[in-house]
Image (tube, rainbow, N blue to C red):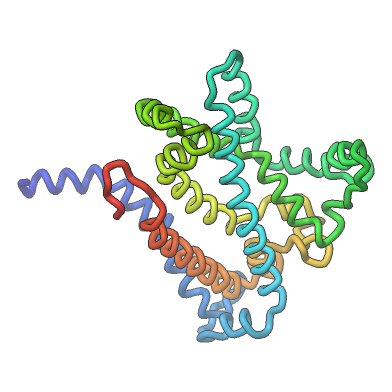
Length: 297
């Protein structure tokens, strides 16, 4: 490739390079430097070494509370939403009249996002007039005060997350329809039933999508913020700080008390946690993800 062609190549990608340096790498490095200072927006930043990190691990009990709440949400929401999306995709991967209408209905919650959905669920989870407790009462079950009892707040958010499995369902449905039918026909000739066909054909063939879904869902679950901010009183963390998630605690430090240095340190700790988990995901994927090409790297 000639020098002239190289120059034109760099000119064409210059907008991306400028955007990456100005909007991604620049702020990233700034937050790293800020995490070692006492920067509070209004005054000159002073270098404080690892004081923010020491305070985080030894002097801030809310840091551990927020980390526990976030890990709890990740541990329960990611497997449940993944399994829920696979099950719904299996049910909707059938040939029956009106199946497109059912697929649309299940996908609709995935496009209904934002504050309106959170207010809707606050109404549904109302202890006295909510639809959830009303349905439980039909079966003689006295429903809890979901968002007002510390032991039920996080399960309530996990249940709310389950409502939006339609996005993942669409991915699984697409890959299921790409599984060669000859495999199922061969399995039927060998006497395999529906359960054996699912575990020995369908499930291995969709493992790349399960892997993708689990990695992105884990990263997304660690970033939970809006739900807790909207569904608690001014983002204070709900009853007994049971909804004080990591990002909410970081937000309060950054934009409520303007302790930017400490908030930047929290951001980098979260970044390291997510990077380690993503690395483990990729390392373990070699043991259970099946690629049709046989390339496990």
